[in-house]
Length: 147
Image 1 (cartoon, helix red, strand yellow):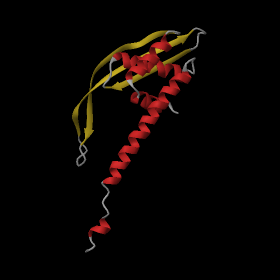
Image 2 (cartoon, one colour; image 1 turned 135 degrees about the vertical axis):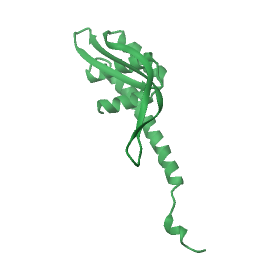
Image 3 (cartoon, one colour; image 1 turned 90 degrees about the vertical axis):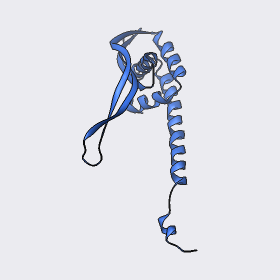
Image 4 (tube, helix red, strand yellow; image 1 turned 45 degrees about the vertical axis):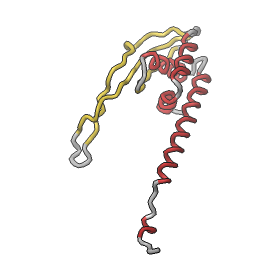
């Protein structure tokens, strides 16, 4: 699993499970904030399909956190997270999980287990979307036949 995949999978898990894991991992860590955890609105910018001109499609609520952690042995790692529709507590928990996993610190196996739940959720979502796409597939060759 790559770090980008980890972030994507953690974004899909139940937020209370994410916060619970982050709280549990933080008990054995010293956490230093690299920036103040914050939430706010992010402007979604898209491009016009004809002229390629940028336009703003709307705003998305986002929370983010950047931290550095140190465990009892002195091992350090940095982590960060940016989550849609989340609180700063959710982003901080995801950042802790990211740091623990990327630094291979104690508890990284628990982060992988939670990420596996997110992966299963993503696979289930993708299967549902594929089923919807398949149910709306049009066989154009059949449209020209007369009964």
